[in-house]
Image (tube, rainbow, N blue to C red; front, side, top):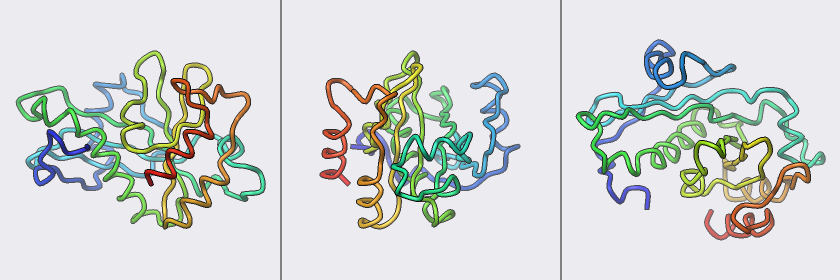
Length: 198
């Protein structure tokens, strides 16, 4: 449950400027800004900015061919990437209990924000580095796991109406170059589970 330790009334989200998240990025990512950023979403707890999410264009048009079957006719412009998610590590402004569920809650609300601001976007794609974390937050927020390569796991969030989400799921590609195995679940089983949840 995404709000088990979190008071949703204390959390808000609003679009901010790059300068507003600069300190977060420089501290956590050693000054490396993601390329192609289109949306900076500030995460506020009791009206204090405690984190941010950055969305942008995926790198390279080949991502479409990696994610979708060729007959789907999805374009690079139909996809946004969740490029960064960061929460402060300061219990004076973000209590430990609140932080437990804030990442997942922020992704869920951030996806809603993207749907409103970019209504033509069909999916959000994101990646987890297997050497750093398991991608548990993406599992908890019903992302569809699409495989792994070079220690990176790929996750996708279908957007839109129920019928569009179903169409997207049917048109996702199983990539033979990616190890489409996640804790014993093959991609078809994962898709089946996602259908029952979404």
